Image (cartoon, rainbow, N blue to C red; front, side, top):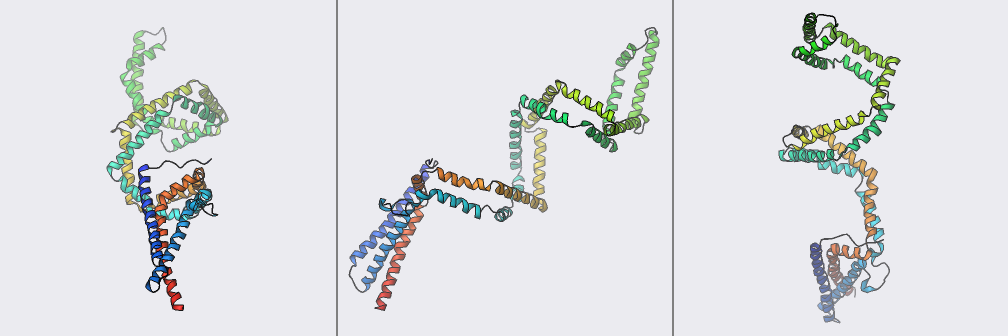
Length: 419
């Protein structure tokens, strides 16, 4: 069902309306002037004969062009002449034609790539981001949007993700090959040594600062019949030896205990990859963990803790996350300005994305033209279009009046010469 045109600017429309009236008045005035001259010079010879012929042709040209311009928007003089009021009657056909014109002449791959290349998008982005105020603005906007987005994720969303997506996927996927491969790579690259060093350092420090706790633990396991003084001496000696032993392992990268631990990890990695018994035990452990009701609750708690930390840093103008983002944005801007190859690659990516979008959605984009015009009321569409372009169309009437007069003089001259 056709609807009225979409909203317009009343002030701008009033200005267009005044301009249209002025040009119409000028065109009609020229027609009237030609008519007066024609009547005044009727049946005259000599020079006035030329003037009369020119005035006659001017009237014909003015009336013909008035008819042509008027026929675009309505029936001239209200008469239902065929092939008039073209816009109200054929607006849908005109919309489809405009859609095809845009698609065939603008949404083409060569044109898109050429325009993106001329636009030098990457270089402009680099220059814009090189301004510290603009870089800060980008970081502020990204931080605000990210903070709002994090706040929109509710606990039930996380629970659904873990319970309905991750846990079923973990159940289906054998975990032993994954753990075995990761553990084997970690051992081969000595990635675990840093963690071992940290654990030994913390353990040595705890043993050294908590001898009473160690003595209490060892005392609980001493024979009931052993004398207390003997127990104290033994536990004290065991504690000192334990502190010394852990310290030796910590300080000696090649300690036999470290080699034994490395060997144990390597064997575990092989068993996870090759031993059916180890793989079965690992899968059973995985199932027990996934069946535990605390999995979802722990995931929600972990997410909330991470979200609070991120939001707190994102909201702080001097926070670590914002400062890091600002640093990376500034570095990216410097690279854009300094590296031509990077700009060329990014412009190529932008062109590829634009071409893909046009290939996939270009028809839907241009179809908006047809769908929108089909919704317009025909008479209202004609009035609105005339309001926007009618002033310029009046020049056709003016030019028709002037050119018609000149052609009339020329024809009269030829007629006199032939006679």
